[in-house]
Structure formats: structure tokens, C-alpha cells
Length: 398
Image (tube, rainbow, N blue to C red; front, side, top):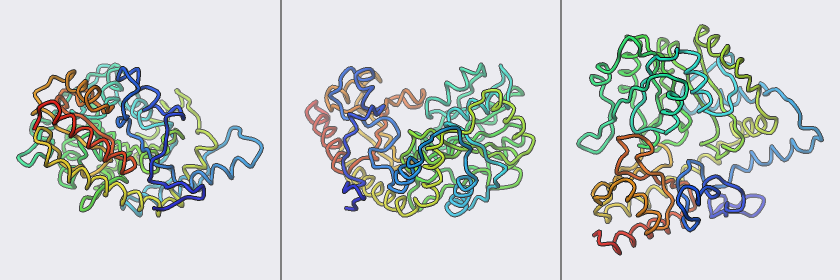
């Protein structure tokens, strides 16, 4: 156990039910009851790094919190982090502020395509990928990710090629992938990037989970593979997942191509979301400057929790689990339970008292699955796994 200056175990249980945390506040609306352990939203029930909180406290010693520019030190800190962790040498002029990855996706879609153009999205995937395409009046092309003989989800380049038309202008890449936990290999990314170049399709790559990856896997930014890929992609990054600071609403957009960057900046200026908030700037800089040791401890904790699920899963005859290569999200295949998606969701709510993300919300290929966020205190994860086991046994699933 490691205690912070406030005496709190940074990876122990923290009660968020009184903090207006989304996963708690929306229990009644989403699950029809507050009597569920919420393990759905992809933020962590883990203390935000002490270096971030101390940086914010120090900034608040100044009596004015007004309009402020993002300090160059903050961008340089992120550039250094990405270079060290992912061997991707970004330049300062490539980067701009965004309040969120989802906002960046919408802005990039509007900047780099026209209404009626086609955008490729892989199914299953984080739900805003679908809504950003539809809400911006583009045509959605869904590419189904299929499991191979080992249960590993793969994209199929031949099938993808057949889905492309002259109207296909963009591909949204989730890397690492939420909810299936894939960390795409260099060969997979190279094949995908090459196909997009052949058909003049721009890649918008959401890499917000890039720092949550388990050995022996390594995250590879698609823009780092070749100069051609760099010039053909928009990379979305941020500290929200890595350091559990989504509430600061800060991320960055990396665009190396001068042409794409100028086109994107025109749309960003039209929206005018400014340069962000003063406290977010400080938190961002502190995380990327001083958060390295905390991140290493976090990965040890997440690895431990992942091992708990791996030890538990073989005894669950009707739930299949393949450990994620990245993210802190467990993707449970529950199709052997023989339930429809509504009934499956109700089973976990009513029988196990757990609030998980239903697989169908991630697309048609997610049917029959449930997503569990295991970035919690280990004792809370153990409680959740026992609840699932007991519910299965108590309802005739053996």
C-alpha cells in the first residue's frame, strides 16, 4: 500500500457516490436502481495522481483564475512523454488544444469531409464514433471486427477494401481499441494505413488509451510508422485515461500535415472553444512532467486486477474472457447464457447488482457481451466477480 500526503491509499477504495461522479449519479436513470455497483464509465475509481492535485492547489494560491493560454511547457511535457513511451517525435506546431477526444472527432469530421461523405467505423467500438458520424450528416460504413480461432478480434483488409467507395473519405481508428482491448500490431496498422493511402482516405486515430497497455504488447501510433502515414492522419491524445483526470476536460490534436492542419484549424476557429481552462493547463503539465512513477504503480495495480479476472474466468462456464492487450476494460462474451441483450443487461443489474456497459451499445458485433471497468480497488473487483459467480450459480448456470 502507498499512501499519499492525505493518508489515502491511492489504489484503495474511494467513495465517489457523493462527488456527483457520472457513473454514480446516473445509476437510477440507466439501471432503474441505485443499488448497483457501477463499473461502466471508462474512468478510474482510483485517486488522481498527487502531483496533479498538488499542482492545482499551488495554482489556486494565486487570487485570480481568468483567461489563460496553455503554457508551452505543457505541450513540451506531452511531447517528451510520447517520445519516451511511444517513440513518436511530435513537434510543437502540430499540436492544438481540445476539450475532449469526442469533440476533436466531430471537428475533424467536419473539417476533412463533406455532408453525405462516407466514414468507416469498426464495430464494436466506443459509441460516440457512431454518433459523431451521424450527427454531422455523414454516411456511416461499419466494418465488422471478427474473432479468429483464438478469440482475437481482427480487421479484414479484403472485406474493408470491398466496402470502400469513391465517397469514402475518412476512417476512424480506435487504438488501443475500446471495448475489445486490442493493441494493433505494426503489420495490422501498416496494412490499414496503406489501404487508406491507396484510396485517399484520411485516418482520425483516437489514441486516448495508448498508455494503458500490457506486456508484451506495445502501442504504436499509426502516424509514427511512415512519413506518408504521418501526413495522412490526425492523432488524438490526452491525459484523461492515463492519469484519471477526465474531469479537467483537456486533450490535444496532433496534425503534421500543414494542409490538413490549416483545414482543421479553420473549423476549430469556427467552433471557438478557445484554449481551455487555467486549472486544466496546470493539471496537464503536472501529469506529463511528474506522473511517470505514479503511472508505473498504476500499471502494476491494473495488471494485478487483470490477473484476478484471468484466475476467475475459467470457472465461469457461460462467460468467455480474453484478456485485453490494452485499456482497463474487460469484454465478457456472455452468449452462452442464451439471453437476449435486454435480458442480459437485466441479469447483471437485477441478479448481480452490477452496472456494466451492455455490449450492444458498442454496435451490432457487441451483441451478447458486457463490458466491465476493472480500474477499481482490488477488493471491489473481487466483490464484483463474486457477485457474478453467485448469480450464475443461483440461476442455474454452471
